[in-house]
Length: 199
Figure 1 (cartoon, rainbow, N blue to C red):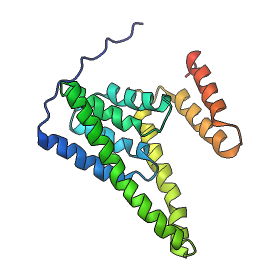
Figure 2 (figure 1 turned 60 degrees about the horizontal axis):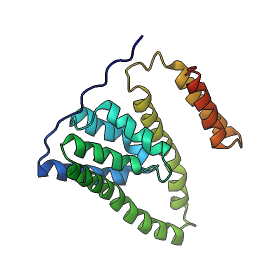
Figure 3 (figure 1 turned 180 degrees about the horizontal axis):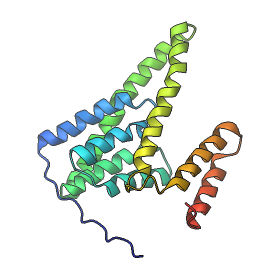
Figure 4 (figure 1 turned 45 degrees about the vertical axis):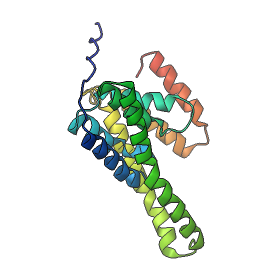
């Protein structure tokens, strides 16, 4: 069975108001990125792919996959999304603008908030409310990461047929949670299973 031909690239036209809207959206996402920028990728998908049609599903998935595979901080996927939006708008100058807008938007508010909150939290770490807040954030972060994995896993519309992949994800999560096995070994096993086309 041959693979489907790749979809043609998007050609979009962005006005200055669209660029400002993109910047404002990433400012808002920055304040929601409790578990890191990756935890807001479900909302990025809704905005960029579903609502605005500025990225294709493939470009969205490839941005995350490439950034996760590359060395460095995983927030680089935001830069790749901005780059792809700019390329879809038709020029490398727009691609650079897309990188600057998305990265500044996702980093600025959360960096300032983190700095101020860390200073305050350190001074007030003995308060019951501060301790409760820290413990209460864990389920929120896990929920955001699960929504991200669902968006990425169901990208091809075949989530029901990909049960081995979902099973591998659950087993990997349990191994990481309940054992001291290094994460690289889990990634290596997943890579081997993928190369052998078990998942």
